[in-house]
Length: 329
Image (cartoon, rainbow, N blue to C red):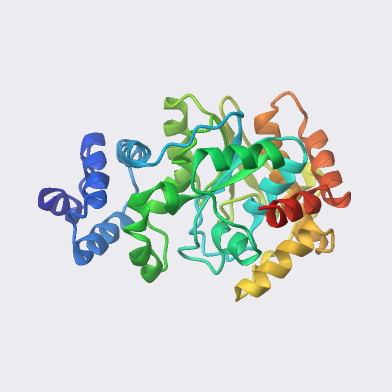
């Protein structure tokens, strides 16, 4: 492990095998706290390579508690770490998708650099985390979605949770979240915080034969923010879109603010589901849900998907699904 630390300290790239061994070393607690923080800091200072990300990903998946699902589902997940403190857009999109007929296996965690990660908001609103494949399959069967709380299925992530929270900024672990769903879903809708990470993801996802759509707003959001132009990278198509192309108004950054407390985040979350949110809040959830829906159903037009996702919110189908998910568990 000392050799890997020394290599990282010089900003040298790890091979795929070395990256794999690095994660195994964390899992086996071969780093003390100081060494672990130092290693994370070294990796903050330079871009992660395709080989490193692949090695990290493969190690985390091999060390995870495997989840076997009976349905072919999609994950809707962002890297986080964009420092924008938006409300819980991807988690809301997962619920809208499920209520619209798209099976969802949402992978999430506590917020490392934001007030409210997906696990934080769901726990606050009364959701009980599931711990086995049987429980998750039962949830997926009943509600067309399940939520996989990362620390329960990735013991390695528990070993770095405190350090990530104390650092309070994105680390290479932010890059791994959307890639290490222990259910190994084949459909992925992924938000990334810059174009370089988007390109990196496209190489990794191509190599694992995933059906994917990577999104990034050019002004720095790890989702479609509608605050300006955004880019999508799919299996075969790469395109820059403007909100007006989809008949949406361009939003202001302050309209997506997620609040300073979990209570504020919770109010926004429920307002969206109950069709009581601002137009800006609703539209950003609708557009992300729609592009995720098109990822799962590539034959549908994006305008058709937008219409379906909007109807799911307006009709309260999304709200009812969430109420059932909370109260029946």
